Image (cartoon, rainbow, N blue to C red; front, side, top):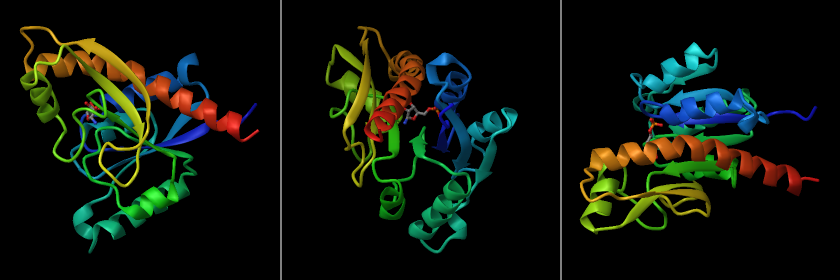
Length: 203
Ligand code: GRF
């Protein structure tokens, strides 16, 4: 049997996408992968409890304990290395990555964004701001994107997307909920797609 791809998930909050990845890794959808570690920059992130419940190493790294963001990410890299991580998945992780981690995991970091990139991405486009902007613009559809992470916010190549309609009576909350349900399908699929490509290219 080929070895499973080990995923490190970086989180800041609820972790419903983390849960979707963990659940999919227990099924055929993502049987080729396993979550090796979950790292949060927020002590109270519910995502940490989700990971612990599954017996996955889950740690809080406090950015305030480090003299710079770079040093914080040095510690994140150290933990990812110790856990033998092949692929980093950002799942509601709210800090901008520093060049050191992007360099260490070049072309091996994915993010999920609740809009159809390249539209409605970039600095300040997160959470309800995204959905407010979509509604303000009168878009007829929105969705979610999984993309490669590079030095710029929401900028790397898009791997996969799923679309949803924008309904006339949508609020940012109803639209966000419709998209989140699609994210939970998309992220495991995109990780599978990514790892299948990597395996092919290494043969
Ligand atoms: C998701 O909407 C994701 O697209 C964005 O942050 C949110 C995270 O939600 N990057 P959760 O913590 O996975 O529930």
